[in-house]
Length: 131
Image (cartoon, rainbow, N blue to C red; front, side, top):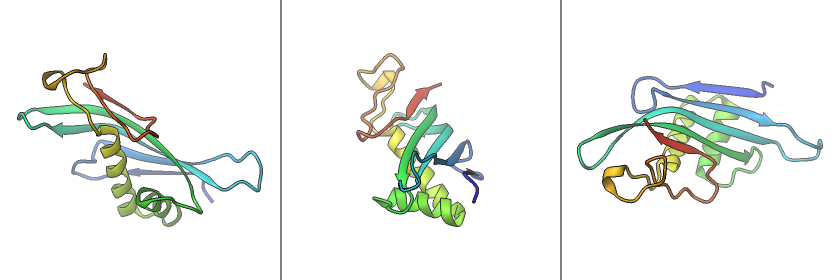
């Protein structure tokens, strides 16, 4: 079994995003199999003020393959085990949404030094940067 899966997406909102997944090495053979997924690339956001913003996305999520905890993890597990490109696209969309959750630009309120503000979901290890 391959230890790495990569997905690229056709024309549309994910055309500049890739989803790369890899098996996380286990310290002991009895540990559950973990897989890490990384959505990476650039994404165009259309704000409510009529502007387009291109942001760089880099969001990661790690999950137990045999025990997916939610819909995102079930999609990622399907992409991993069945090479399901549709599930991979849906999962990449979800990871992009999580990365973008709560962002604002300088024109829309208080921001951090990167020009963005994000809440995340407590587990986010991703980054969003305005170009």
